[in-house]
Length: 313
Image (cartoon, rainbow, N blue to C red):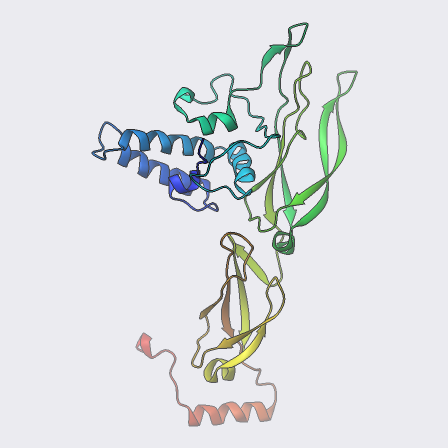
């Protein structure tokens, strides 16, 4: 059995949003629909695209697949699910259609499971519900990875049938390079099963706390960097903060405010890693003394310059 890279099949990045995945699916489905396509492999491609979309459109399946994919698997490699693999998804009740046409790879990961009659007494058992929560982390957590302790308020029914809330403390491993919007799956930390059935899973959607210096877009990191007029005009080599520490960066002569410079590979880790983009912001020294004001007057006399010339004024 071969490993399938569903992102590659869909032609999208692993950081793609759900809207981007939906648009990619619609475009490919129109192109390869067997009723209209003239492509020689249209039917096979159409099935392959449908299978990829079945996984990537669903947050739980996507999170489980991403967890597996981080193990370093590549498209076309011989693949066997890890011994402890259990995606834990229940497909009873028409969770999807056309499952019989999905590949062995899909079935090995998301095969039908959940409700059943088992055990010596033949009792009914059901898998517990999945739970969802949001976790706020710092950009530094995503850059370095590590473990965070979180406290969750969990509703449950006591012996008298009343709904009560208890607090549960969990240690969560933050994968190195995780991006906002991705999910961390904690197997077996969801709702309890019924009749001895397995518990559900807990999915934590990652978001970043505001950072005083940096902002993230996918794996790329952005920094607004203040520079002086003479550094921008003459060029300079200055220290720039990154998530991995300070680095030296050259400011090209003649730079303007808003110019974007790239520090390759200085974003969040990944394959490939993101970049850091430094956006120049020219800051003018204050004219808060007579000497400073005289300097500006001399500059105006010796360097006549109209920044609004392109506006016709």
